[in-house]
Structures are given as C-alpha cells and as structure tokens.
Image 1 (cartoon, rainbow, N blue to C red):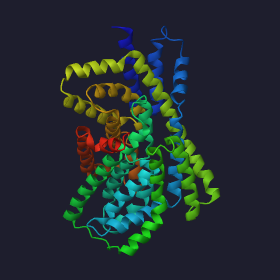
Image 2 (cartoon, rainbow, N blue to C red):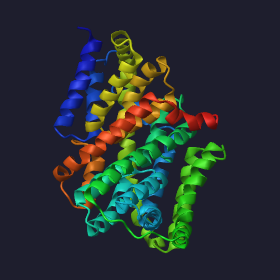
Image 3 (cartoon, helix red, strand yellow):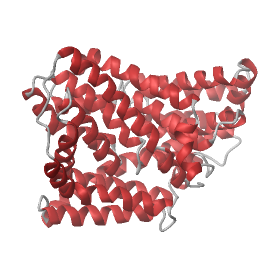
Image 4 (cartoon, one colour):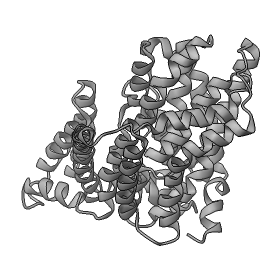
Length: 434
C-alpha cells in the first residue's frame, strides 16, 4: 500500500474518530490534517506548511465580507428590525388558515435574507413567534419545526455568507454576484413549499384564521418595514449592478443597519459594544473553521483526492443523473455531522470538477450544495439550527424530531427539483447576464 493511500486513510479515520469523540469540528480538521501531513513530511518543508496554508486560506479580500455581514446581522437582531418584519408579514398572511405559521415562515425568509444568517433568523423570529403561536393553539414543537426549516431560506436568498464561502472554494468559477442572484428563486421556492405543507396541516387540524388586515393597515406596516426591506435592494442591487463588490456591500450593510437601529430607537450607542463583542466571537469561530478547512482542502489537492473521486464516479456511474443523486446523498450525509463552512470548503473542490465535467454550471452546483447542507443543519447529531430552534422554542430536540420529519422531506423534494431543473437556479443569472 502506497504512502499516499495510507495518508488518506489516516486523514479520514482520525477526522471521523475525533468527531465521534465530540472534538470541535475545527480542531478535528486541524489535527487530522496534521497527522496526515506527518506521513508526507519527506515531501514537504515541514509542519509550517499547515500554518502557511491556514494563513493564506483566509488571505482573501472577498472573505472580509463575512465579519461585516455577521456584524450587520447582529445589529439587525438587536435593532428592532425583526418585530417590524413580523408585523408586516402578519398583515399580509395572518388571515389565511394557519396564518401565524405563514407569518413565521415569511418573517424568517425576510429576516434571514436581510441578515444573511439562518441562526439569527431562527433566534430572532422564533423567540417572538413561538409564544404568539402557542396562544393561538399551535403546539410549540410545530412552531419550532416551522421556524427551523424556514430559517434556512436566508442562506439561499442573498446576501448569504455561505455563498461567499462557496465562491472562494470554487476558485473563482462562480462569482458572488451570480450566486446571490441565483439564490432568489430556490429560496422562495423552498419557502412556498414549506407554506404548502403548513396549509395542509392548518386545514386538517382546523387552526383558526387571524383577522384580515385592511389595505391601510398593510400600508402602515409596510411603511414601518420599508427601510429594513430596502437594505436588500441596496446590497444585492448594488452588487449586481456593479456599483460595489460584496465586501464593500457588507460595510454598507453595517452602516445602514446601525443608522436604522438608532433611528428606530431600539438601540443606543452604548449597546454597540455588546454587539461588537458578540460579532467578534462569531467571526473568530467562522474564520478558524475556514483556516483549518482550507488547510485540509489543500491536502486533498496535494494527495490527488478530487481526481481519484472524479475518476471513480465517472467510471462506475456512467449515467449523469445517477452521479448527481450519489453526490446529493453524500452531501446530505456530510451535512448531518459537519458544519456548513468546512463542508463547503472541503467538498467543493472534490465534487465541482465532477459536476462541471457532466455539464452542471458552477453557480447551479453552489445552490445545490448549500441547500444540501441547509438540510444537514436541521438534523442531528450536529444540527446547529435544530438546537437553536429548539432552544428558543423551549422544547427538547427529541420532541421536535417527529414533527420536523415531514418538513425535512419537503426540503429534500425541493432539493431534487433544484438539482435536476437547472433553470430554477440559472434563470435570473442568465437574465442579468452574470
């Protein structure tokens, strides 16, 4: 057995063993990469290679957008924007059967899109909507399930940090602007699909309708939410129009969110120190994950793993639909135990050459891989969104699993549609010539 094969075995066995021992993902990736590199020490300058690859991995202007979008999301969460979006959503859909569940979904879509964070949407919207829904007779487990799954739409509808990470991992074959505009239709489709299942539950269970809002009330709530919604137009419109880059847009988002929160009166100058500290902690975690993931991704390339997997899939499965299904299945499994950021950075270089060989556009694949991993963060054992959504709803994870399963099935169905109907993702990028 060659040293390369042994190195690959050591890499995967040590990585999964550390995960099973509940070692944090970033440390698991870093330790597994180090152990594997030790077997190749004669081919490399030394273990300093790991530090070099970690450092160069985050030496990217595009990655500066991530801490700023994180900060913008934290400001929005604290700045009263969530309440305004909920009231606007309620004025639109509360009169339908199961109206408050629709409000939860629509508010999560709006807040997730504006903040660019599924976790921010789940905590901000869930903490408000769960109690309101319980007062109307909805089980807290159903509220949590709706909140958990609908919050993922914010990772598809721009601006989205994970799409920026994918743009980096794709080596520039997919631009941030194209990915942002490509995420709209899949994100909206996912939100409507969840609404469809909620409508079925509401009608079968006989949940009460809310009061129908008058046009003047809808207009009033729209005016109150207008400047929050305008952020989407400014950020995404500016990027697509070429006025500024995604990184510059993230800085504009921070300034806009700060001014808006102060104008609303929900934040004071003194509150920003706590928000900055929280954002710094989140950024440190994300950047450390990116550092170690980029080192492992480089090791994969050094060992020729992407080429080996590409040859194996293309030779063993000569049907492109079977290959797409196999890749989706692998990504769904990966998503259950690995956080989105390292999963995108590690597995994009592996699978992107395969799908592009079969004619899939890199932008299309970006949406597919992100939606796969969105399902993963809703499922145990890692399931960060599952734990956050359960926590804010004040129910146990085991209680949520059963009502959550049909929602996950809906997400998988949408994933299949997006995987095999490229126009869902590619219609808008081609329309805007991106």
